[in-house]
Length: 131
Image 1 (tube, rainbow, N blue to C red):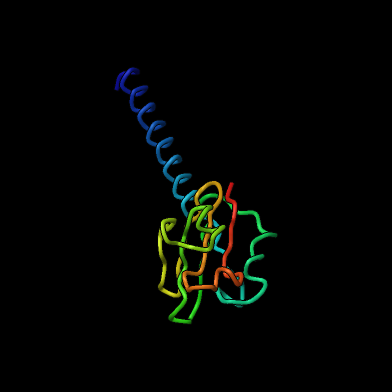
Image 2: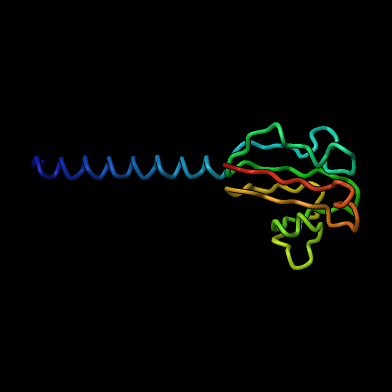
């Protein structure tokens, strides 16, 4: 083999290796730490749920797991206005209703409310910031 051909193959291997590293980093960014909202209590109506997460440090790509067994409950990802006024109407980004919802956090503020009438107003909502 000529020296030029060996150099070209070496460069190709370096490029392939670099692309593989970027792909692996990208996968890690999408599969962050999982957090169960409400910890052992899950996504339910109790006084502390609105304060859940205040002591945690979230990153974009982390996953919030909303666990609930009440068939009336759901999780509405909303914008800031929907969070403030406790309404998904006109502010809904996505509705989750499986009882075991996995939501990947986006960079910045992420807002979630219970879509049952009045439950958000009683405190069944969270806002988390992901860096």
